[in-house]
Image (cartoon, rainbow, N blue to C red; front, side, top):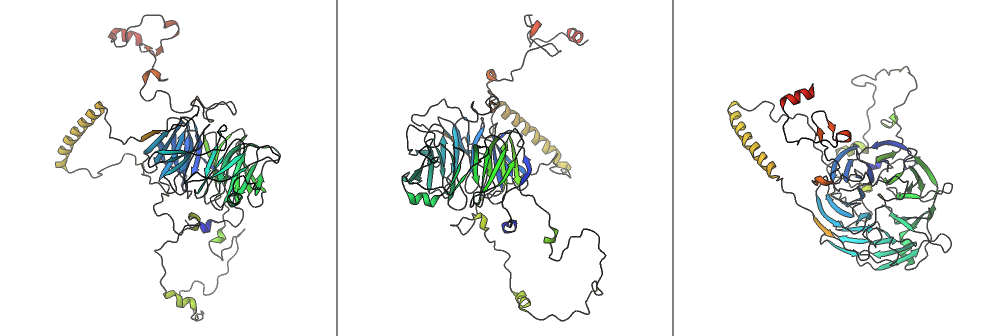
Length: 538
C-alpha cells in the first residue's frame, strides 16, 4: 500500500458515514493497531473481536473474559493484546493463537489499560478509587505510582508518546509528570477554570506525532498542551494551553477525545448523543460535526493511525466515518477526457498503421541513455507513515494481518477415492480411532492447554465493593448489569443455571404449574404403558 498516494490534498478528516461493523455481540470499546490494519473490539459478552480493517471482515474472535470487556490496548509489534473486564481482571493475549499469557486480578474495577509505547513488558493500569499501577509482565510485579493527594484517588494516567514519562491527573485538576523508570516527579501544574476554581481531570490523550497532548476535564473544555513546555516549566508550573476547545452553544460534555493520526485534528465524542466534533488543532476552529442515529449514546471513539477514518461505538455497533471518495477517471491517463455526450472522433491517417511512415527519427536524449541502467525492484523502502521520527526502519516482526483459513463446505480429502486394497485397513483404523475418541470423551480429557498464571494485585486502602461505570447506576437509567456477561452458572453449576429444565406432564408438553401443581406425578424414570401412551396421543 503506497500511503503517499492516499494523501488527500484537501481536508484530512472524515465527512460522512461509511458503513458499520456488527460484532453480533454488543460492542463496548475499540482500538486500532499501530498500522491501522486490524481493529480490536471488546464486547459485552467478554469476547474480543478482531476485524481485518482492509477487507472489513472478522479475522479472529477471542473468548477472553466472562464479564464485559471495558478497555483494550495493542502492543507495539501487534502480537499481543492487553484487556480489562468489569470483573477486575487484566489479561494479556497472544493475538495469533488466541491464548491467554497471564492474568492479574485487582481489588477494584479497571478504567483503562495501556501498553508502554516502546516496552511491551510494562502495562499501565488505572483502577477505580486507587493510584495508577504499572505492571511488569516478565516477573508479575507491580509498582503503585505516587499521587499528589492521598485522599483524592480518582486518578487517570497515560504514557507519553514514547513512554519516557507518565502523566497523571486527579479530581482536583492536578497534573503530575513522572519519570517512567524511577517514578520521580519531573513537572506538575494545575488545570484551573480561569479563576482559582479547579476542575476534575477525566482523561489524558497523546498525539501519535509531535509533542502535543489533550486533557478532557469536567468543565467541558478540552485543553491542548505542548509536552515540551510542560517539562520546561517544571514543578508547580503555570503553562498556558495552546487551544481550548468546547461547544459554546450546547455546553456538551465529552465522553472520549483523541487526536488524528497526523496530530493535526482532534475529535471529541459527545456524552449526550452520537455526535462527533472535529477541530483543527493549529487554529482551534470547528471544521465538522458528524451526527449518528438520534437517541443513541456514544461509548468509544478511535481515529485510524494513518488515514482520515474514525470508528465510533454506540448501541453495541461500530460505526465507520470516512471521506467521500469521488471517482476521477482522468487520473488514470493524463490525456483522458470525460465526455458529457458522444463526440464524433476524427481518425488520423496513420493512427492505426503498424509502422508510422511519417514519423520523424527521434533524437538520442538522456532518457534513452538511462534505459540501460539497472532498476532496483527487490529492496523495499520503509513507509514514512509507519516509522517514528527516531526510527529509520520498520519493525520486521510486526503483525500487520491475521491469516484466515477458508471455510470449505463438505471438504473432500481424496476426491479420487482410496485404492481398493486400502479400504479394509482404513476401516479398521477408523474403528480403533473412534473407540479411542469414545474413551477420551468418557474420561472427559481434552488436549492439555497451558493454564495462564494468575497474579493477585493487593492495593492498600482500596474498597472492594466498587461497581464499574459500565455496569453502574449513573447514566440514562438503562443499566447494562442484567445483560452483561455470560449466563451465571454456565460452567457446570446446575443449581445456579437459569436454563434449568421444567418437569413436563406426559407427551403433551404441559409444564407442572397452575392447576396441575398439587397432583401426584409418576416418577420420570418410570416407563409409560403402551396403551396409556397411545390413549394419551389419541
